[in-house]
Image (cartoon, rainbow, N blue to C red; front, side, top):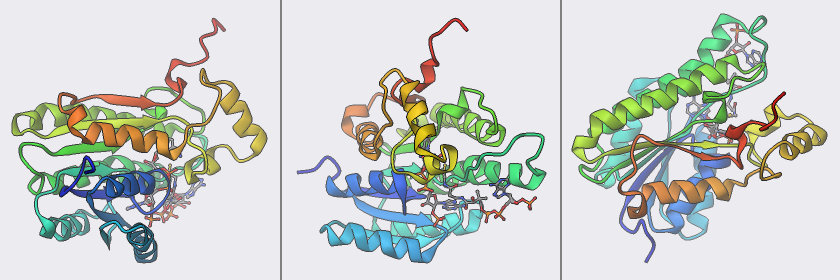
Length: 254
Ligand code: COA
Ligand code: NAP
């Protein structure tokens, strides 16, 4: 028996990368998975991929910036019953210096990451199992660590960390746990392709980390399964770093 037998999970931004790995792991442990992202083609392909392993999956195209569309996706997912696990991981990022990025580009990242996370939480609230549901946002080290050419992502992810803590305060009474995972640099992802363009840059990033390697998508999925499971039953309002020590910085005086 898997840990999530007979549980319903919805994964926003679940059609590629880290979030698809989380969805696949939840499915492998018995959850019925509902995937949401903008592209219907990506939804169909990810649903087929999970089903081809013999697990249960369905999906719906929606942009997390569009509250009505998110609400419709949640209602479709809830046809299977109350939602036990919500993973909110849709995001957009690119390198852009603050003096160059347009106002619309800055707003776009805030809208996808921060407003999108709020939309998924707000729309899911009524459908989540009470008590027992687990909401997991996907944050990033940028939330706490200022980085050049990342003002937009830093501001958006910092907002997510605070949002998670506020929701944990408000929803604890109803038995809903709200947490975030902050992955460090994760191998074979769109996020790191955008931030570390070359193999040399990627190696330099890995060398600077206490654990001296990129994380894997499985590292993040392990943490998500832990937080979503009974093993995480007393954890709420936490930002769980799955980052090889990224958040510690270099540890050098200068
Ligand atoms: N550098 C600077 N500005 C950029 C940019 C870049 N690399 N890419 C897009 N923008 C700007 C656009 O020029 C536009 O601003 P403008 O109207 O002032 O010209 C604004 O951002 C919105 O771009 P648009 O292409 O309309 O946005 P979108 O909603 O279609 O796509 C993105 C959102 C830009 C975040 C896109 O990269 C995306 O869909 N990303 C998802 C995948 C991803 O980022 N994965 C990693 C997750 S960490
Ligand atoms: P990814 O493969 O690009 O995944 C992004 C997902 O979000 C895709 O499924 C994408 O599908 C969806 N998406 C994007 N914009 C959306 C929108 N407006 N509405 C709905 N869905 C949307 O990226 P990744 O690198 O695996 O990153 C996944 C998460 O981990 C993100 O939250 C990211 O910030 C976080 N993270 C990543 C790293 C890393 O090393 N990669 C490190 C720290 C944190 P569509 O294109 O179909 O919409």
